[in-house]
Image (tube, rainbow over all chains, first blue to last red; front, side, top):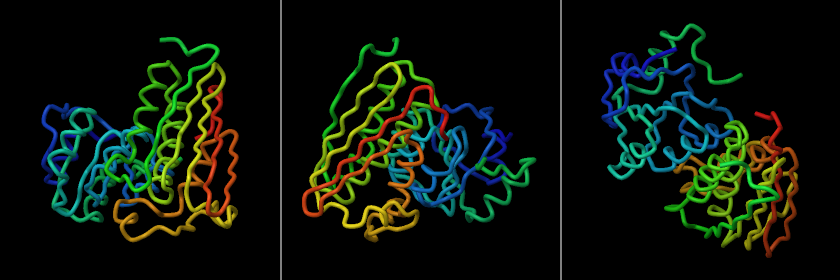
Length: 118
Length: 148
């Protein structure tokens, strides 16, 4: 289990959706730039770590019940995409770290590595 | 709101190439199913199926009609598109096989997982396609099912 506030600290991240509870906690993490893979393999309630920053990420998370998104490598979605996430109560975090570094840091805090697979 | 009885029906038009609205029908279907009181796992499976099918229409077809029917024991989604059709259905159902363009892949789609994922989430899956005319999907998700 990892809390939003811990992800922010670990990744030196910026919360793009103010108003989201920093205590919100997540059991699983799924990392991919392919929304097809998210729809196929991510578990509901997982945090998505991705380098893709378009509106399809938000829609995919909404459809597949993902609970938060971390955008890596300094990627930032457009303001209207952030608004879309806020209206769906989906926390968004931006970090300058690479996908690998972000995943490594988060995985180090999860007992089972946070694999979002059964 | 209780699950509709005997059935709830609604149509959703989808326009090929309309990437800006991609996922709008699936999100609406998801909200409808939630409001109808279906269990979250069923809602999620149906939403994923609807989204994958909608993306396939947007990426490959010219237009389609998605028909959603909800009864006490099942969610049924049929997707009738007017488009180029699929020459080799067995190949299209192979994970990883894709004819997607670079633009589609940049959006995070076109990895060749759409049809296999629809099939994986469906309790009953039927596909029929005619080259030069279009493709029809008929998917049933049982409300008491327990697929992923």
